[in-house]
Image (tube, rainbow, N blue to C red; front, side):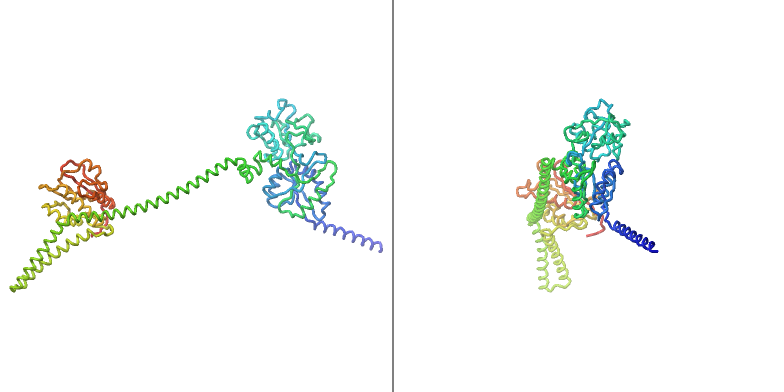
Length: 586
């Protein structure tokens, strides 16, 4: 029984220790390290597992796990915040640094390598039996295989070919096999490509493993004197970077960096040095305009502007000049528009003043005849009034007085009507166009002109229908036009004993046509050419504004005024007014 108790006690102790160890393992914080697997996940695990093992041993509170994948896969993982660190090539690190604010904690170097700043390059390989291919320039027009267009080895070879005058995307035919890179050698071996681009030291590795013959492949453009242990066709760039992503805590990153720089690797393993500045990688990508320096990326646009800064400055100055010019033109247009509006308003006010002056001038010319016409009803009123006085003195009957007083009222109304027409015509009222019957306006204008014509023993012949279709017009302005044309006709016939003036109105289609004709000497050719020119007149005392203002008035009513092209004797002026479709009577 004692032995059994001791055995049970020992077993319980062992189980407790095992449980404690398991609990401690479960409490470790997982740290995910992405690894670029350009040769496949197995090769990546073989190359980088010793580094992760030393990190696990040196930092027992953490559990470092490897996540192997392609460059695109790792970039997506960084964007999704699924990685804490990465081990990747210098080109991929540069893109992560620009796009995701990643930073390098250390730069790798082979234990027997030359230096961490000259560790990575590319080799352009061809089959050894292709004797016609001796230099990279011999690849013009041929197929070149590479793992991917964003593979660092291809871009390193891209830079070397550009220096030799070849554009890999134009002068050669690139063929991309995808990862792992071994597919490049397979394609070249099968004759599907004339040459291939692989990472430095890969050729030596596959030969050492027996996957390729020692004399099967040959490296074109081999660089010498650079301290590299492998055959390369390009210059050497800094080694792979151990990268911290932006969200990784700084204390953890500091501990990892301390462990990496203090590692004591075994034979064939990696040495981690202080992080390189990777300026040579930046220069390569900038010269190729790829990665963060592609034309339509943030750095690419900035680099492009810097490269063409003088041209950009000229274009910028031209753009600024053009903007200033447009602003200046806009200001001038606004100022000119304002000045034109002010000038138009001044011209309109002057036209109103000239129109009023023309009315006064017309009334002045007709004043004596109008005074004569007013004197007639006044004389009749006086006669009837005297007669009424005499009848009252002799005891006249009321019926006779009533008839005389009625005649006095009729004559007074006649005089008042003459005065009203004169007042309405002379008053400077604003123009108000309204629907009206033109026949009534024509007759009223003829009645206003009748005393003037009678003073010259002349009667105006009138041919006006009883009714005409409605027009939209200002009554006073329309009378002004008719009176001006009648006055011009009266002055044209002068003192001729057989002088005649005729006014006719009719409807022609959708317009009302009014014509004033005389049998005077007619119009000279100069008068016809300058007929409606302001201040031009053939009369000794005229202002030269009558016809000009008359045409402005008619055109403001939507019509037109002109003189008939007819032979002398005489002249005929016609104006046209559009008919409106309104059932309104004025």
